[in-house]
Image 1 (cartoon, rainbow, N blue to C red):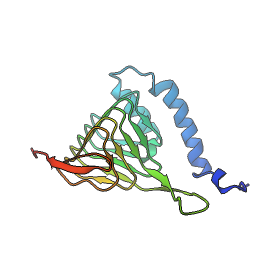
Image 2 (cartoon, one colour):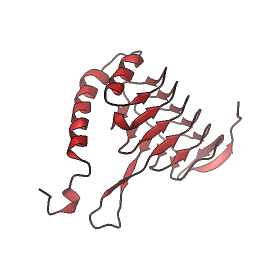
Image 3 (spheres, helix red, strand yellow):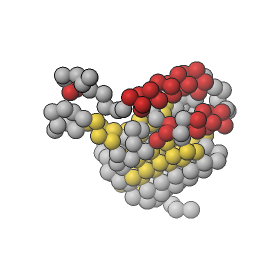
Image 4 (tube, rainbow, N blue to C red):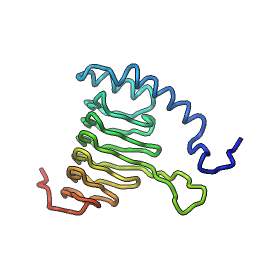
Length: 180
């Protein structure tokens, strides 16, 4: 049954909502309260819900991942406490990418020009050795190239070039980063 008010209509499938309920229970009981060094345990829980994680990924217990089945991490990725990964579409994190405290990867929005206000989503790609600093936000559809840095509180609404430091709202290039 479809509600008369399109704003009240479900934005995802019933299967997706049921999977998120299951993940929410596992997150609350087993993930969130796990000991700080229990990275392998949390990685195993994420993998049980379809996440693809390389070796030595460190996902901290305070990180919130909306849909683990849409999370793809290469080796040695760090996701800090307080990070929110809202990923109705795929979020890809390259090798040695770091997502710092309270950063927000927002993979969806709404089409505000459509009277039904449908949800829109697009993948986020964070390249190898990129760093999303504390309280920074990456919007849906943005590609952060290898080695790019999004500074404290910056908001990336467009793609970020490789080995460049960005900051501000919206993020603008500040300087080049030394490439190893």
